[in-house]
Image (cartoon, rainbow, N blue to C red; front, top):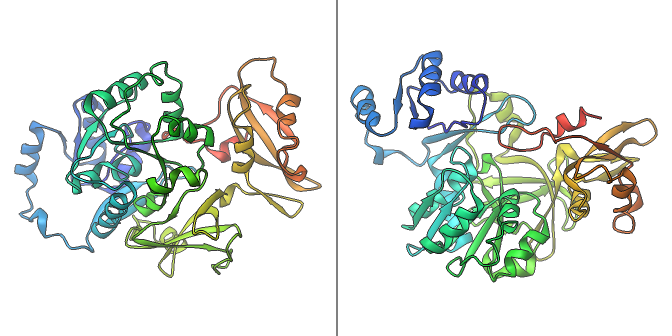
Length: 415
C-alpha cells in the first residue's frame, strides 16, 4: 500500500506514481477527476473506494489469503516529505507495523475501552500509525475527522467521550487559541500525544493546566514512526524531553564515525529494531547511506541524560558551525517562541568570512513597528553571546512544503 498526499501537485503525485508503479489506484469521491487522470498517466486502473472496491476485487483478485503474510513481508511504502530533494519511499514491513503498534500500546496504555480522535492526515505515517492503527489492534475505537476545525474538535471530545488524541504543535496552538478551549468538556480525555521534535513548553503546560498529560513522541517515517516517547506517569516531570527509548527498539547517540557518545553529549540519534524500514524503494544508495550495521541514521541530534531521558537538539543538517562552535537553531527558536511580535520564524546559518557561519532570524512580523533590534534584544541574557543571531530578515511568509513543514534550504536561499 502507498498512501498518497492529496496536497501535492499533479507533477509530484505523477512522480510518486511512476516510482511506486502500483497495480491500481484507490480514491475517495472528492478526488475522482484527479485520480482518474493520475491513473491514466501512470497506466494503472483507478477505482473509487466503496462500490469500486468490489469491481477492483473482481478484476484484480490474486487468490492470496490476507491472513497468510509473514512477519518479513513488506507492507507499505510511505514517501518522506522531501525537504532535501525528491521524496524517498520508506518501505515498512509487517514486523515494523507490529513493533510500532506495541510501542504505542505501551506509550498510551491503550485498552479496548479507549476511543481515539484522529485529526492528522492518514497519508502521513504519524496520522496513520501513532494512534489509529495501534488503537484498532488494541480493540479500541477511532473517530476520524477529515479536516481540522478547532471548535469542532473540542466539541467532538465531549460528545464522543474521546480518551486519547494526537496533535502537532500548530494544531495544539490553534486549539488553545480557540475561545471554546477554557470551557470545553475535556473530562474524558486522559492523555494527549504530541508528535514533533521540538514542542514549545508553554503549549504543553497549558494542557497540563487542564489536568491532561501531554505525552511527547519522537520518530520518523523510517521508524514507523515511534522510536522515543514519554509515558503519562512521567509527562509532567519531564516537560521538554522527548522521553525514553521505545520498548521495541534500541537508541544510540553517536558521533560522526558512529561511535556511541557518553551521557550528556549531543550526537546523532540512531535507531535499531523491528520498527525501522527495510529499505528505500528503488533507492539502494539511500538505503546504504541511512542503514548502517542495522542502525537507521535519523539525521537528528539529541543528548541522553543520566535518567535515560533524551533531549532533542536539532537536525544534523541544520547545525550552524560558527567559529568552531556548534549552534543549534532549535535552541534559539525556543528562546524566540515567547516573543510576541512575530507570526512565524526560522533561524538558519548564513556564510560569514570571519566565523564561517552566523545565525540569522528569518521571520514574518505582526506589524511594521517590530524592528530587528527588538528581535535581537530578546536574546540578551537568555543565551550565550556566541550563539545569538547576528541579523534579522523580515519576509511575508516562510517557505513550506506540501506537508506544511518549513524547508530550511529554501529559507537559507532567501538570505
